[in-house]
Amino acid sequence: MAVDNENSNALKKIQELEFTALDLNLYLNTHFNDLRAVEQFKRVNMEICKVKKMYEQRYGPLLNFGFGSNIGKTWRWVDSPWPWEM
Image (cartoon, rainbow, N blue to C red; front, side, top):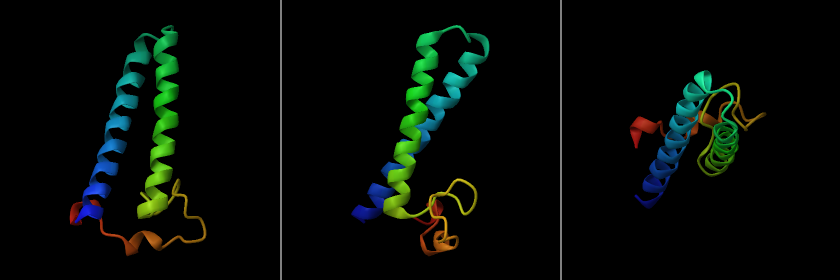
């Protein structure tokens, strides 16, 4: 079960970062001159990319299309349990 717990923690980290990015995005809609928030938004987005890449290398693609890093292994996503199956 340690793997499932690690997987769950990794997914939770992605959710937390995406929530932060969304919150900053909404803030920047009305405070677009806040350069500190712009820099924070950029850092969070870079962190999201890094964490998603690490997740996909370890557990497989997060998506079955589009931005997944498994080009050439299109159907690998069906080999892993879905998030609600853990």
